[in-house]
Length: 481
Image (cartoon, rainbow, N blue to C red):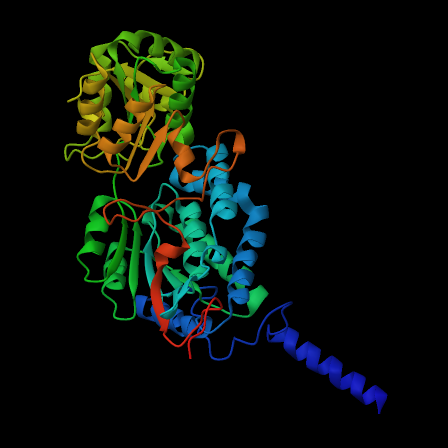
């Protein structure tokens, strides 16, 4: 009898292994779950969203501990693969640097707040108990950029899954391979840990048409778009709740009280970080005239190349800006040396940023270039600096920074700029959660919702805030029968 029991147990274990059901720590959630092409990838929008909706109906009923298990699986799974993702992204998109991408990926993976920030808010008093809880929207339709594809998959997935949602992710065609790899592996990690599939889904062949179809799909409850103005506009006119991360053109202001060594270091380091493809990165400097020359000298000491030839400055503008006014993708995220080489400019060493003086109306000042090109505009007084910075920020209300030791100047600039992100005496990349020397600098922020007003998004952004009243209780301080 004992041998028969052993034989039956072996048969059962082998059957489970062959059917893929015996996964360590997994729950029995796999019955009738559609698999499509495998690991969250589908041929059509309808198939992908149907699978996501089915997964969300299961996921929504799971306890918070289950969500924590999902998030931990993502962190444990992607942690050892950071370098591979960074290198693969650089190889596919041709933008930025591997080192900066590793930093951004670590930030997204380890600094994105999870379910822990969704604690309920409770009020009690003579009128009973009032409780506010953060609950899921359902299926969220997301769109990612080519500039930060892997980071956005991680950041958005952690935020949205923490809120109890599932995600359809529309990949940018310029980063479709790494995005698909990310989503396939995310599903693999989550399935092995929980037995649940399709919490994040995408398409084998992404396209503009598929994104438009997703935006109008009846089973998509909310949209979150990290991309250019056109796709954000499409989300905003979809009729759905939309979180839109729009364009930015961040000015860095420098007044005559600034620590110029620190200002030069922060601006050049942050502008050159990942070759300026972060939307938060400094795109122009507006400096008080009496410290301009000192600032430029210190920027050169920090690795910037000063271009003085006006004809070459105009040539770079013509070369990098298309007839429609948009930056040429050939140069987006490219090294400063690549741009200088293409313009036929001689240089020594390996400059990380190209700096040059320009007036406030120059196209390189008023265009979000996403390249390590940094125009410098000088103004006679601080009031002129602030007025000019407001003008060249172009009303995006995205990001701005100031370098000053004058607290009233800092306060006035922060108030007047009215941007989602404002940084005083620091690099603007710290507003994404990336800290100088690796220090934590706040929750990771890869989707910065400026057009819709949410600012740096968190898991709370992707939840409904629901109110529950219980007039009969519950207050321990008093009781009236």
